[in-house]
Length: 175
Image 1 (cartoon, one colour):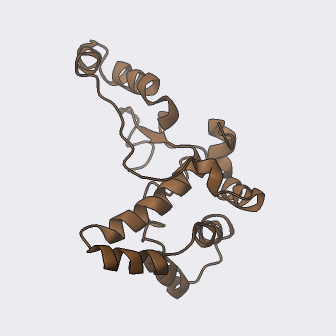
Image 2 (image 1 turned 30 degrees about the vertical axis):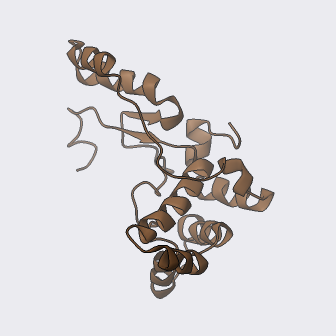
């Protein structure tokens, strides 16, 4: 639907620090491929899975430079967990801006989710349920702090691939 079709709706999404998001998606891609496999097969999968460096360079080519051929894209997708087409991987902000009314930040989920609830239910009933049930976000990826995966060059490549998210949503590396 275009913006005109959505004028009567409150549209929103949540974004995540792009450097943290890249590490999480890389780690999750391997975990998803290994799900249910016996230990010896998991080791083999880990040996053939793309490195974080390779995934970031391919993501930069795909998202920022847009110079990846379809066959190359398909090979990369398969080797790197198949998440380049995932909606989580796409920038939340573009040159045209955002088609959404609100973009919350995952780093401030509790605060921003309250904003969403207040906008979609002015009666406060949904907010009361949220406070009573104590919803929380959960991170199932097992990896080190995201900053430990980056060289200055990889940090720059993610910044370029998500330039509008970084600039418009105020992300900084290491926050």
